[in-house]
Image (cartoon, rainbow, N blue to C red):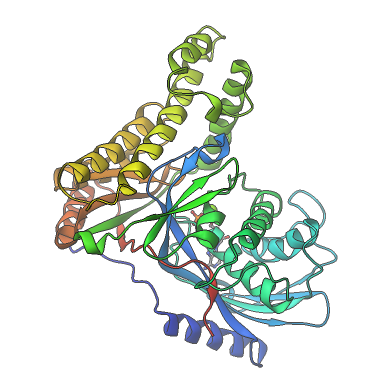
Length: 422
Ligand code: ADP
Ligand code: MG
């Protein structure tokens, strides 16, 4: 009963086979190719993206696969295993943002939305297309299944429309990908109506295998930070709590609003402009600002300290020394401090996340924290490679004790960005 369940990543061959079979069945012809994009997990730097701060995601081996064929007209036809019975048909000239007559339903918004956004951003025109989606990124688990959908779509459309912006996974055109990220974010914000900040799409398109991506969310600049976990005898265990709290979307919006209000009270555009040295004074001003002063203090303290923790972790990982001993302990301390700040100051964890993190730490993890937006979703734990099973088992046992549903696990090997498979 206590055996942890791991969600395996499809191999590239399996991904191609699954997406191609679905395409054949739905459209009865050959796709032009099969493209993919990964989900992501953020190592540190949470709720910093929309504050112009730093994040440090890695691309997962878990990917959305998309078999796609260009059409000569403006029609889009979409199929996925979740909607196998019906093929959704859309018209590129009729679709529009959420809340308008052209609004697009469910996951179609992420895919058709990318085509629409490319044209809005002046990167088109793009033609219509038929596409079959097959993804093994856990849906709604805080691992960015949505950005994986957008990323797979955007690299496919880049190639079949000869936009020349993506390059390949092995030789990416990073400047081009930065522009494609913008269109993916627009699709998610405007077509799907999810006010996310851009870290997910950047990770899916701009990460590199064996590296974490230091992402400056204000400038869009990135740096590849070596992260050879296996070489250091380590693993990053992802714990998918399977919890999704229904108020999550509203809470996300209210956290963003609090950050904007704090920034405006402090006379800055974004909270990234508040330095750690200036923080105590800034907090005093917020405290005195009105009845929500105490709330603004907590939110701001999280954002400013989290950006500093991200800088500190990047510095540790970039020092050229092996990830072991004191350095490993320091990395763990930063991960733990991040979680504690998200729990106590940003107040975006939940019992399932806190129990997972506490159980992982007690079972010997060097550090553990929630990752992604929070209020459910996933946590990560940095563990010895040969302790993965044991830490996972401890989390399963803690969940059973608490009466929570069983979590799922995956092994977050830093993997390749979006590209073409076949
Ligand atoms: P996350 O990105 O953390 O997984 P989101 O709520 O941002 O969570 O995105 C989840 C949404 O993405 C789903 O509700 C669905 O609309 C869409 N989606 C992702 N993967 C798939 C899939 N394989 N098939 C259909 N829809 C998907
Ligand atoms: Mg998402």
